[in-house]
Image (cartoon, rainbow, N blue to C red):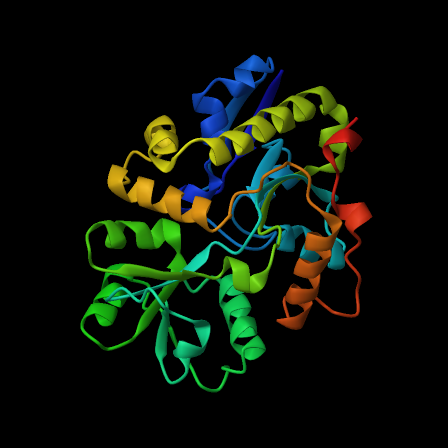
Length: 307
């Protein structure tokens, strides 16, 4: 059995997507009689028009990994028949970082502060604005768009031009490892459990290659269990080869932060309640049309339904 897995461009290979690397490194796919070819795209993207999704749509790849928000929006726009079939990231993986430790930080301390949105990633930015609204801080926090140069933005934090950096831990961990920044808080708990990222395929491809997709899901389920059982250094040692240009100490810091914040899904199933909570959040921030439903039963295929 064989599947082609398009990961998007190099920027899509983030630490919080390490479950399939762990599965590959530890031979979990091979144990299921499955081989995986990892491919990439020339550019990244956060819609069905960009990044890895077109490779799935045009048949160049069997599956990919990305946000269910893309599948939801695709459904509303009457696009191809995309499905989420296996969980990966079960919470918001964005963090706040600052120039000094703040062990007693609470979100209300953002009042009157300046936050640089280093990543400028659409749904992450909109979700942060949603959080500010929920906390009655939307008019009390200055949100500064990132410059496109992370080092420049981090320097703005250390020299006092801004108070906090907003980004995924994958991007923050190298600066934290160097002592330039300190992790202040994860946004995961504030947003609640949401299926931030999942494995995605076209319904007809899953049906035609059901045995292979079932094998893939079992291997990922095993890898997700190991992400709970192993400490960050052990995981980092097993996936380091998949992040060749990433400092090992930063890899440990990033994996540990995601483990502590319960970012990794614990099971391959995507719960209905979490999917619906996410769709409501995405409607509230304007990513989805609130007048058009995004039915869980249509867009999510549970492992036992792949046949």
